Image (cartoon, rainbow, N blue to C red; front, side):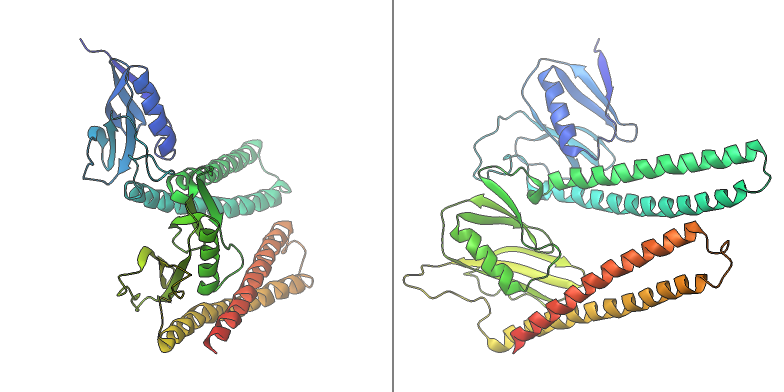
Length: 378
């Protein structure tokens, strides 16, 4: 009679990579997975001979690659296994079994989940501030011990929920990053670099920066959807020309030049972009350009200046209005009864003011960027 072993792993669907390593370790100990209950985090194993195996957790995937077999599934979740030993991979950052396409659905699911938990954290934070403010006012009145105790219990529950949601948000961000190419370990063969975070750059600046990396022996492997985080692998230094084009959503990226290697297409907000490259011999060839037509290049730059710069100007105007309203509220509060503008409301106004100043600083930086891009047109 077969004897099953049941094990639970909480938050297994968040720590995908950790779950895969955990299942592989149990397989090596002689516990072979037979059933999955995703909602209760329950894994059922049968006792078998210890063996090497690689397991992968997949989400909303139907087709299986060679040498892979499904061992358990529940709803959209699927766990597959292969017993083929890993081979040397030409791509040092990934095992030969793990493909970026297999991770996309999990990453997309985790990103939506992360957004939900961030919104929950923000919501419970403001609810907690108002609750503390309200209980502080009630404390000065004659209330029974039971009523105050219940309010304290509510505040304690809100604090626990806020701590859990904040922890889960950070955990989701970290574990999801591990599933992306740019989240992998920085070894001697693989390097993750960030071109820009706060400061905006033109597409030509980014292209020149990528060309410098190739000259140093780092070949581009992948990049993030907003083209500011890049993954490189060690390669022979070569002369290369890069092109990063960003166009309005109703425009199509020129991909008619088949001699250019297409790296990636993506979108960020209302903008589409595309990355291409072409290697050349600097001793006998001129540096190739993806957009040789001056009118076409001018159209691209004007579109970027209009979208990015116009949006930045609008944000700046809105933030100036928000700052005016915040400052007016603080000034007017001096003429009101102090009990009407209490410490809790002052805290919210201060937080709003700080956020407004930060956003204004970012908006001014975008306007500076618009000016730099506009110079390219001329």
